[in-house]
Length: 453
Image (cartoon, rainbow, N blue to C red):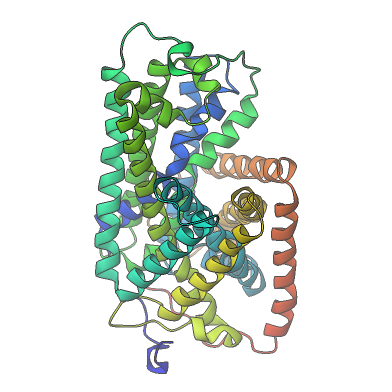
């Protein structure tokens, strides 16, 4: 564990805008973009509607990013959403969010992404019936140690991952738009063309889930060298890059496979690359999926530990998490605890082969609940703290945040309606946090944290 002398060391402004953009793009553009397009196609009636939904996904994400830009520039803090919720609703709500992020949201995301990586590695080189679980655990350990080693190494690694995955995604675009043999139909790609029954609401759920993760920018707002105004650039640039890449990939999928065949696919990326380069194409898409998973895991580990640090900074019972190491520019103990919880969730794969799906269900309702609360906090903080300097104000207020809150509320509803036992477990862990909060009240907030300039 970190030395006690590091407890009052605060984060330094060491991240460039490029570092931050690479982090956010790396989180969002993950393996999901090679799976969800078929689900969106299955719930839209034609190619035009299919592509329109991806444009709308980018616009909805941009509206949310504008809300986050106001919150992040007015209240920059390593705690991100935890800090916004604490200021808007009080330390109890902030505590519950930090508890949920530590035990459900962020650690669950790390476990999900690690399973994706583990599944790919197990197909390439199996080491037994639990290959996927073993590989998933090893990658969490390796990337946690990488982040513990220091900020410079972790951000350099993230840049390499992000550049590689975006380059790979563009390769898929080129393959789909220019290299697919002419005169193909669904039979040529071994797919059954399906007659779709449009379900626009469900299609948008899948689109927005694929765009998920851009809000992680809030957790690095206090470490940007460019200051508070730089966060607006980070958010808008990240969303723009992600939207363009997603739209190009989906145009490639649609043009190469056709809408009906795409709706019948279980892995559109694999089908496209197999069509162009055969077994070599399948191998290439597998490597791309693995790198995308690594990119998202590394960035998620980086941002997740910062909420745990904020929790330890503010509550005595969790003070072991609130130690910032000056040399490595990171919360070492928070990294260790986050890694251990992620490994515990991954271990579910030892008991059930549906571990991946269970963890998805485990995280979704709790995530969207707090996402909705963050959206509402923009209204609360405008009224509660009207004199705070706001370098950026969300345009078209209150319509923009209202729309953001409505989309988050719909996804909260959908995540509860379409999930199973895993969701109940996640909600149960959140309720457990209430009991931990009662205990923690005996040792309330330690030292008021000063907002960085």
